[in-house]
Length: 421
Image 1 (cartoon, rainbow, N blue to C red):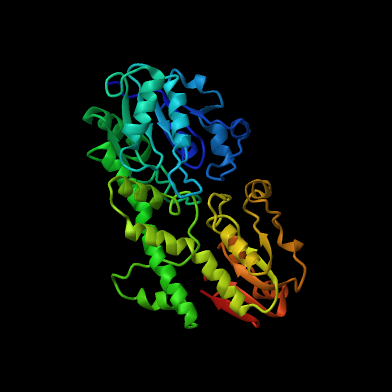
Image 2: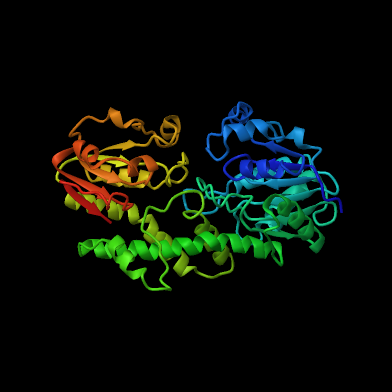
């Protein structure tokens, strides 16, 4: 089987673009995204996700398009579209199904379609394979082949990049698995694990973030217990982590495109098998309730109505607003009668307005002295960690509260009341 196949990447977001750039160093690669604006930005050397530097975009051999017909000469297609949940926390496979129909429209005999999107076991073969087959009028497993290699992109992480991490690969046949191992291995130094089947590879991905979600849920639960006792969980964790086998997780508002979503895919898989996933969904319930717990705590300690939340993105030092739980915190505070402003210089204010109808503050110099009764340190952006105690205290009232969700200011000395989770 030919190894140096022309490759088409479907979806050029946080997952697809870094993968396409890495593969383009070794293969002929074309990328496709449904957003014409995204393609226009990439042509200009701008990556709004801040994952790829402008110099890299301008020097890469990767060609990008908003018309999938430009990818019809590719022989290996890698689908990297998002797999979100709907308003009822059920898996929403519509982006994956739409991408499969588009690929099916240009699929040829001998082609291979690989999925990187997070799914529960069976989706690649039973859902995507059938769509490809129906659209292309080709037979899956005979005329074209399937593969799966779960994405492990961590937005904002410049250490665990796609070319430096282990990739799990699986194909419909051992030959396809070997081919995927070769292709992915070329771009990541042969850091490859061959799963025994596509379903095993799918399952391995969906449990990775679910395990992390459950561990964080335990920490969030004990955090709420200790808050009632005026004990900081961060102080407790510092003491407990001196034991050699203690697993150190931290409390927080669990959002984003993976940890806050993937457990629902695993839960759906369990329910399809007539099993009620008690631990998985209990962990989700705890984490989904954390924003309300924090809002209630602020209500108990804050004497005035004006609150400033520092940070809107779902994690530090990135512009990603997907499934951010800061919105839940803000909404709970408003329901409790607070007037809430949000500052974040990392995210696009137009996206904040579009997705959440928020007019956010983007510059700290917009904030007048003594403007707030409470400052909530919600996202540990680098800029917030570098703020001085004098500045932090200057924008709150004399009796104001500094509430640190992320433990980023515990090393500072404040004259005003400072409380951390």
